[in-house]
Image (cartoon, rainbow, N blue to C red; front, side, top):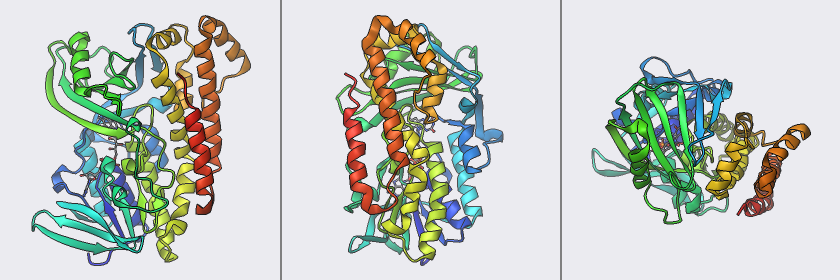
Length: 450
Ligand SMILES: Cc1cc2nc3c(=O)[nH]c(=O)nc-3n(C[C@H](O)[C@H](O)[C@H](O)COP(=O)(O)OP(=O)(O)OC[C@H]3O[C@@H](n4cnc5c(N)ncnc54)[C@H](O)[C@@H]3O)c2cc1C
């Protein structure tokens, strides 16, 4: 393909969905990935995805052997490992664990069927620029060992955590410096268990400084006798390796006894609000490259698919108007950040709260049920932690012995609301961004719960 309209860098879930939507909108779309075609979709992941993302995007539900197992609830354990919160019967939690490779291959096939040209084995090295405008990419064709330049009207960086294009740009609207503490470092194993799981549709999550400082450990069922289990810890503070934490956890948690490791690997995931602007001149960002992940659990498959669907439509409009600039692409920001992006931003505040309360406070909060399953679900939906007056009084009585913790919860609820309102008022034009950004950073600074 000589002169595509759009080049999508990366064929992960976000790249495939964006490329597919671009092609469906009639754009000549080329997608590049450094992997060979048969490895597209392979990704170190917890493999869990909720049904709601498919409902929101119209992408077909996983089916057949793409599904590892159905997920319909979770047990969330505090550091004491007792008084766990049982999340059951919440529709928003319904979903699956998937076979990542098969799921990824399906998304790739759907993109190709929609008309996307896919070149595997192409390592994108850098953006091509005219002044500051991105006008294409330079990639290494790994089979022929040659450098190739491809020019396009728009480049989409869907290269995941690598941010292969974003990290090489110096444009006023493009953030490249991501704080290490906004990244979770992870390690996970796929394990065959000695005994069948007692509740094979229930995920388990473990909190606390011993098991995963600033993060959590998970166990997601992959079948009656198989799990995806791992640890994600907050980066940047020299806390040690996630693998060491996981192996330690494995030593003392009984379910692991006699288990057999089928696969083991590490990875990183951003756990921050999305990029303040998802577009630059001639370029847009999607998926992990745009920091579109849920800050409390790191789930990013759905967040990136939702964004890709919008981006394809915006790209079509901007290219039709011959204006794939920051200004022409701006509606991608306003459509995503005032909706799903708002939800992710408010969850960053919640993440900061969880990271700053002590293990003792967390144990107390679980024991006294200061937060209930409904609160977690409502926070996850972006509806904050708003409680009615009566409910507030009840919890106040339950938490009276630890006023400090109640105040922290109250502060988090208020900041979540504040940031949510601010995202709702995302600037309608690029000129409003810097003032808006200052206000966001002020709320982030205020999110000190120590
Ligand atoms: C341990 C772990 C557990 C997770 N668990 C979950 C979970 O249970 N549920 C969930 O929803 N999310 C989970 N996530 C997050 C989720 O995996 C990501 O948010 C999601 O995969 C991001 O998709 P993406 O398309 O943006 O990026 P990726 O899936 O990373 O795809 C990026 C693609 O770009 C290609 N690429 C990169 N650089 C270049 C280059 N220079 N040139 C060409 N190609 C390039 C890569 O080969 C890759 O195919 C987890 C992440 C980790 C690390």
